[in-house]
Length: 176
Image 1: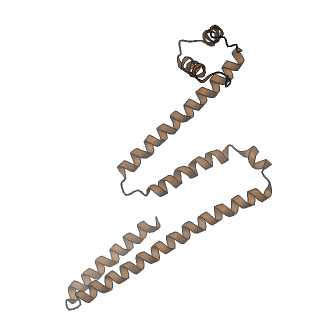
Image 2: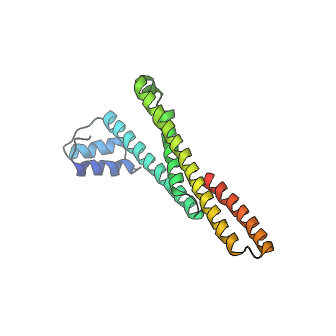
């Protein structure tokens, strides 16, 4: 099938998606065009094409769903969402790759494990650095504000309470 000219292959694909056409109809049409193929070959090809089309349709549906979620949650970290999508895809691939894992050299498996561990460590370090920077920024902002309103003790206490709550909320969101 893959040796047929592109235009013939495209016509075969269209005819496969036309549920009114049988394999015998497609084989007869190909014979008229001067191409001979068995029903088994056409069936295998059709299965691959339909399976590929279904995978693409599934991917598009998941993409639409993700775009809808991102649209409804403008504060969502798209990097985190993308990472979650990739992790999900990798987990699906891994769950169906038992044979590949069994034949994988131990050195390669070890390198993959180290890379995964390093990625997790990098994520934790980034979270820690982000938290430290947020703490420093809040500390400096609080010091400056408190310096400005120090002659108003009641107002200073209220501002301090507001800043403590804001810091807690911001740092909780930065870690999540």
